[in-house]
Image 1 (tube, rainbow, N blue to C red):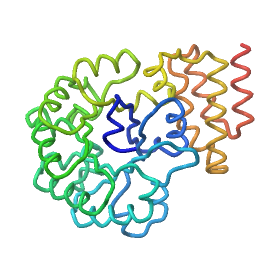
Image 2 (tube, rainbow, N blue to C red; image 1 turned 135 degrees about the horizontal axis):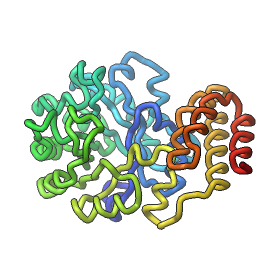
Image 3 (cartoon, one colour; image 1 turned 45 degrees about the vertical axis):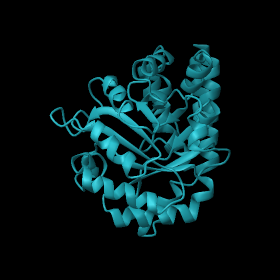
Image 4 (cartoon, helix red, strand yellow; image 1 turned 180 degrees about the vertical axis):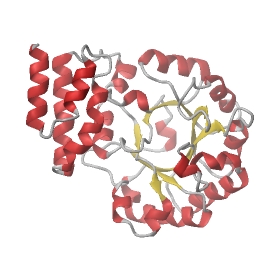
Length: 315
């Protein structure tokens, strides 16, 4: 697959989400029609320190589809070296590298990383250029509207990123200070789309198929990235692409148990710990969700989970 072939249609992408975008969840989304998934953000410095656990975050799992690895950092030298190392170690199994210029978390921006780069375009340009020069893989950039409402600079940032060699861009049109509150400014996606000549992916507030259609119609963007809307709903990709209905309780039970079995296969006993982060999200909108969420937080084995879900189905 190439960037050109990816955007020959209107691709659906899975966002990098810290703590959630592991290989198992990415696989489930790929099976539902996700065209390109991203790893959770990976520290460039962590890679350079030889942290094997950090590198493992970027390794594709069994039967995964196309994968992008997201790097974060603000030192051009470190980012370039990390890109080279990742390309050497994993390049044959990756579709692209992505640069995080959008994370609003305090511990990230305090170090000048993530959305802090929205306040320093010359530095961001050096970072992007360094990554591009140190990999043969396409490089994408995920960024925000700006730092705050008084400093909306997404169009300028996008032009800079294109000039620095980015192959495509993803815009989450909220500011750093907004975090994930308020409404995503889809009109800004359209403005940025009119600014650049490379593909632009729209991201933000896509929670169902109707929202995906509105985003595409309103912005004319080239693809849709789905983040929080997919948590507990990996089938959202097939809903958007094929109009498939949400699963009934029996189908939901099967999907949850398969998620659990894949986690256990991938991570052994720790798989249940990972699964418990996802479980409450599957019950959003389900009758009696509060009690279900409380009870699944206490399950320790897949057998306990299976029995809980069976009892709920018969109740």
